[in-house]
Image 1: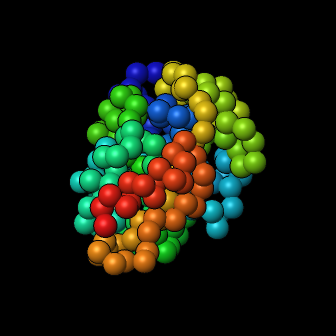
Image 2 (image 1 turned 120 degrees about the vertical axis):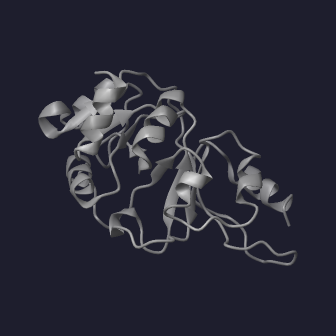
Length: 202
């Protein structure tokens, strides 16, 4: 299907598996109807929030508060390598998080074109909970039930490997701040590189 058709499907509340710089993600609008379907097909617990994929921090600012120096911090890493837990700026569905929302700036050209049109989309891995994700968007979508389950896809194959590294990010940076980013999920960026980048800012 053409990208325009996928956009219309997503806007209608459907799911779409799309490529990222690591693994395929399954995207939906951050709305109740779409999230209901997402959590159903992934067999995911409501207590495990999903991340949002965005074009940039400006787009993310519709959902979260952007800390000082975050853009500079992210510039030390390849775009899309980190997912960052940030403080919400609006009330959201609890399945996006309550204490914080996880935001990932997408790097894949197709993914960026998609969210430019749709706005932020869920960026959770395109697999049932507890299973290994496929690198192929079409295979991943079919494993989630395919069109019969409301899951469409964009034809693409991802490079695979480790997912993005999920970190929490302090809301403020001060010269003597004891707080620092915390690794919440290991991924493509090792912890020592996260801390080294942080130390350059304080």
